[in-house]
Length: 155
Image 1 (tube, rainbow, N blue to C red):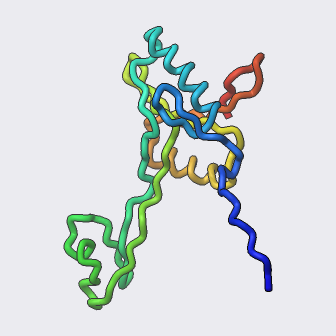
Image 2: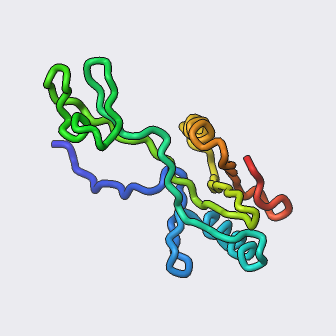
């Protein structure tokens, strides 16, 4: 008989610890520190608005059958999930989305998307390419804390 061991508690793959600061949940200590810097900039009038965890759709959900794509939720075939050509059930492919850490708006109306990284995940370059393709007007700023002398460095 094989002995059973208690299941290990799953944590963050990069060992980041979630924290709560002023009632706002953050995925890591560094993210909370970056928020403090943004809040200082907000009070100084350098930025006008901070949004938390903005979501961006990189690929909408769709159904596919008989060589056709059905993407519009208003389309009856998409809603029913039945192919109008062969009358078979069509599989639903879920959307691909990206959730950044912060969206910052400047006084001139420009927006900047900030993502705090300690380590870059293997899939992130692909996500970044898709983001840049679908949202060319937005600047994606990926930053990490280097050290006390360099501070926040854009990657």
